Image (tube, rainbow, N blue to C red; front, side):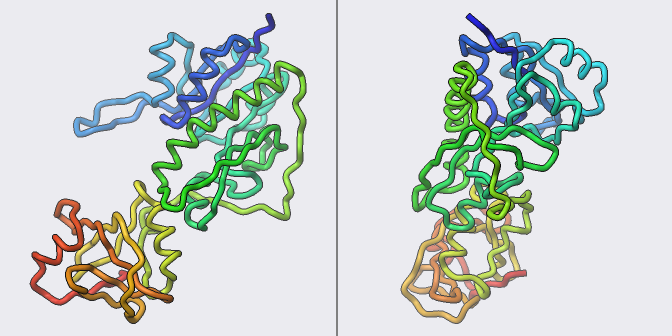
Length: 312
C-alpha cells in the first residue's frame, strides 16, 4: 500500500484534529510537524509549546519549531531531501516563501475556513458572522505566493446557526477542517485532484481583528449590525462600550421594544436599553470594569447615578 510522505505546518488547537487525522491515516507517512517556538503563558509565564507540538511530542512525531521557516536553510535542505509528496498548512501564522512552496511532488495545500475567494485572510470565521452570513465552509487551496489565492482542490459549505458565536463556530470548523482534509486525501489516493481557479472578481478580505474593533458604536449601527458584532467577537476580542466613564464589556444583547435616540441609554424597568439606528437593544449580560460578569438587572440594582453610555 502506497503511503504519501507529508509534512504538517500549524500552531493552535484549531490545527490538532486535522493533524490527528494525518497522524492516524493508513495512507499517510507523517514526517514532520512544523510550528512556532514555545511562548511564555499563564500566571507564571512558563514556556508553553503550541498545541500541535504537544501533540507531536505525545505521538513521538518528529517536529521543528521556528519563528520563520523561510530562514532555516539547514532544515529546508533536510525537508527537501526527504522527497515529500505534499505539505499541509493550517493556522500556521507564517507566510511560506518560494523554497517552502516548492516542497513536495504535489506542492503545499492550505486549509482555509471560508468558501474562497470570500474572506481571504486571518479572521474568516469572525467576518462571516460579522456580515450576518448564513453559511460559511472549508476550502483547500494549492498555495501560491499571494495570500489564499491558489487554485481550489476542495471545498464544502457549513450552515451557520442564527445565534452562533465566534467560539462555537470556531469549534465546529476545526473538526470540519479535518473532514475536508479526509475528502482531499481520497482525491490524492485515487489521483483525482482537480484544480479550480478562484474568481478574482469575488474576492473579499478578513484581516486580523484588534481589541479596538470591539467598540460598539450604537449611534452609527443598526441592531442587526451590533448583534452580529457581539457574536462575531465572542470570545475574542470581545465587545464593549463605556458606562458612566467605565469600560463595560457586552457579553450578550437582544432586540428590545423601546424607542430611543441612537446612542442613548436608559433603565427600562430593570433592563439596560440602548438606542441604535433602527431600534433598540437590551444589554442583557455585561461586565463593568473591575467587576464580575452579571445581568443588566443586577448591575442596575447597584447603580445610583444616571446612565450615560458613550462610545469612546
